[in-house]
Image (tube, rainbow, N blue to C red; front, side):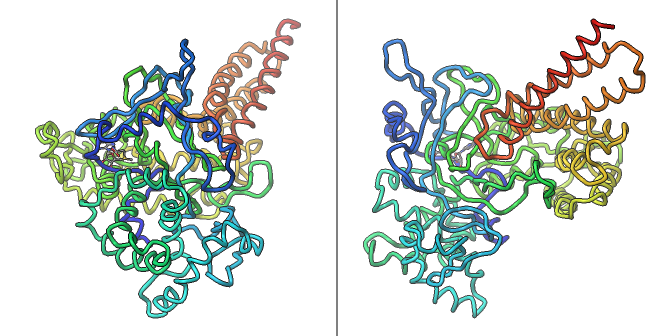
Amino acid sequence: MVEFMEMTGESRMIDLPPVSSSSVDSNPGYLLLIYTLDIGDICGSRTQGRENRGMTQPNNRKSSSGGSKPAIHLDSSPELGRYFVASRAFKPGDIVMKEFPLASAPGPLSEHVCFACHRLFARAHICSDCRSPLCSRNCQVSPEHQRECRYLTKIIAEIENRQRNGKIQRVPVQLGMLMLPLRLLMLRREQPDKWNQLMDLESHTTARQATSIWGFNQRNITPFLETMLIDEMPDIINDDLVQQMCGAVDVNSFEIRIETPDRRHTNDLPQQPMPNSQEVLRGTFYMASLMAHSCVVNAQISIGNDSQMTVKATVPIREGEGIFVSYTDPLQTTLQRRTFLEKGKHFICRCRRCQDPTEFGTFASAVRCRSCTSGWVLPNDDPASIASAAAVEGVALRWKCSECSSELKSEEIGRTEEVIQNIVKNIQRLPVDRHLIDRCEELFVTLPKKIHVNHAFLLQLRISLIHLYGNVPGFLIPELSVGLLQRKAQLCAELLEALRHLCPGYSRLRGMILYELHVPLVCLANKKYEKGRSKQPDQLITELKEAEIYLKEAVQILIHEPTSTPESRIARAAMADLKQLREYIRDMEKLKHLA
Ligand SMILES: C[S@@+](CC[C@H](N)C(=O)[O-])C[C@H]1O[C@@H](n2cnc3c(N)ncnc32)[C@H](O)[C@@H]1O
C-alpha cells in the first residue's frame, strides 16, 4: 500500500496537481460557469444523495446593476497553468468559493469506512455479494450500494483468485482502490457534464507514463474496470481512458475527513494525540482543482461532513491577486514538500518559502552541520537555476552549511529526515498516557542535537504535547503545576510564532493553538491571584484580558468551520469559554471598584 501512496503522491492533508498546457482561452467554460451558477444547484436543494448534489459556489456578490459579480476568475500562466484570481478584495475569513465533489469514495487505506454511507464503523458488515466493507445490512440493501454492487460482484472472484496467488492487495484495499475511479466512470453515463469536467482536469498523462504508477494501474485498475464496465461502455473503456482518469484523480483529489465522535465531552480519551488517521474519503473536485499551490497560502480549504468544500481567505487578498492553497502539509520540510509535489503533482514549487533557505527565519528544515557543529545545513537552490524555469526541472536541492559551507546531498538529508520523522510518528502512535508526555519531552532534549529547535518535526511534536498537557490523566488542566502550565503556554507561543511565518493569518491550526493557549494563561493568572489574595485584582484583570484576546481570535478563525468537524466543535467550546471569561472579567472589575 505504501507503494500505492508513494506512486500516487497522496498526502496526509490535501492532494492536488501539475502545470497544464491548457488555458482559459481554450476552455471558456470555466468563466461561464462562474457567472451562471444556480443557487439551487449550489446548495444541493434540488437533488439529494452523495453524487447528485450541485457543484460549485464561488462567493459571488450582487453588483449595483443587479448582476452577479464573480468573486474569482480563471487566469493562466506558463508556470502555473490555470489558476484562480480574486475579482474583488477578500478579508481574512471571507469565503472564496464552495463546492461539492464530482465524486468521493473511501480512501484505499481506510479500513473502517462504510463503502455506502461513508460513516465509520467498529466492525464491518461484509457484503455477501461483492465483499465490500459496509457498516450494516441496511447499507447492503441501500440503493447507493446496490447500484455499485452489481459491478463489484463481477470482479470479486478475480480479486480473490489473484489474492490467493499473492499478486494483489487484500480485498477491501483492492476494492478501495477501484471505488473512486468506478464512481467517476459512472458519471459518464449518469452526469455527462461532470464527466466532461473530470476529463478536463490536469492528468499529467505524459509525465506519468514514465513512472511506476502507469504499470501499477495497468495491473491493478484497468483490468478490473474493464471487466466491470465492458457491457456498458465497450466503446470507450480502455487503458488510455483509465490512465487519464487515474491521473486526474491523483493530481486533483483531496482528502475528506470522516466525522469522529466528540471525545472532548466524554471520558473516552483519544487514542492518538494527533488526528493522523487513514480513515478518510478521497474526493475529486472540479473548481478547487484549478487552484494553484504555494507553500505560503492566502486561502485555506475546509471540507465538511457533507463533503462540501469551503475555500476561505486566510489573509487579506487584493483584487487581481492569485488564490493559493497548499497541496502539502505546511509543517513539512522543504525536501518533503518538494518530493511530494515533484512526484505526485509533477512540478517544482518556487514559492517564497521554497526559495528562502531559512524559511523566513524559522529554520524549519535546518539540520545541524556535522563538519563544524555550529552551522546549519540549509536547502539551497542554485539561484542561476532558479532563474531559468527550464533548468530547474530535475535539479535536486543543494544543501549547504551556513557557517563552513560544506555541502550535503539531498539523499543524505532525506535519510536523516526519514529516521527522525519515523521517530516522531511512532511516538504519536503510542497510547495516550503520562509515558507519552515523557517520551515527547525527551525528544525536545535529544532532537535539537541533530535538527533546529524550530524544525518542522519539532513543530509537529509541539502540537502533540500541547494537546497532551490537559488531556492525559494526571495531566488534566486542574492537575497541571505552574511549571507545566507555563510549559503548555510556551509550546503554544513558540508554535504560533512559527505559524506566523509559515501559515500567516487565519489558519485553522492558529485558531486551534490560540484556543489551547488561553487555558494555561487563565489558570496561571488565577493561581497568581490566589497566592496574593489581598491584592487588587488589576493584574488578574490584565492577564485575563490577554487570554480573552487570544480566545476571541480563536473564535473568529474557527467559527465558520463546517459543522461536525473537530474545529467547529472547538469553536463552539471557545464561544462558551469566551462568554464565561468575559463574565469573570466583569465580576473582577466590579470587585475592583468595591475594594
Ligand atoms: C490542481 S492543478 C491546478 C490547475 C492546473 N494548473 C490546470 O491548469 O489544470 C495542479 C497543477 O497545476 C500546476 N501548478 C499548481 N501550482 C503550481 C505551482 N505553484 N508551480 C508550478 N505549477 C503549479 C501543476 O502542474 C500542478 O500539477
